[in-house]
Length: 269
Image (spheres, rainbow, N blue to C red):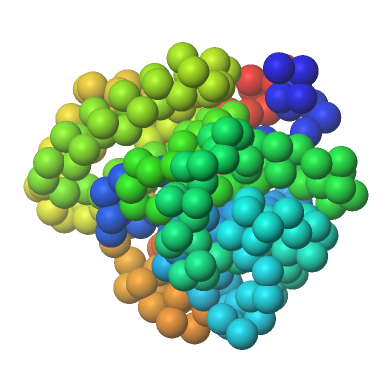
């Protein structure tokens, strides 16, 4: 499609893994913050009914007057839904528990898989001049996740450094293949990022070796370490880059942002 031309539009990346607890929201928040720190204009779309990305960026439930639910199902104006965060260059479309019923309500909509795609390509979006849009997907392969995949140019997959980590990827890859065949033929895998990595742990090293052997260049060189500062930051409603800018976690997300931008600069050349 012509509206997917990257030079004129923001790069849209869905952060997805149907397995919970893999660092998906943490990666969305901190990669977004690291990109924003580099001067990129970033929008995070919270597509998880738990609303953890919204909470982690300091948006209180009472301040979520309009959410992704209203954007997808109530035709609320895009400019009413996008909120400013405490991080410069980083904006958010928040979510709350209302989104938990969206899957059922979407079923009766004939454009059910394309609602987010169309929303993120409204003319109003041009006024924000975003460089990157990161979509924090729910931990399931439901219609919300399919909406994210149809809307996105690529999928970023956080992979926890634990036993059986690779086994859960097969169903995700099948879903990506189905979306390519039915709705978004240009969808590609941005990459797999290893999270909660402990270099002292033989298991982490084995998971990394297996991932690189099976997925080769799809695995980012940057790994995200298990770091207490990364775990603490959400309770202070801050990205780790703001909570402890000198921490190993902050450094890792800066490296991931550098790697992501370099990869996309090379692709655009």
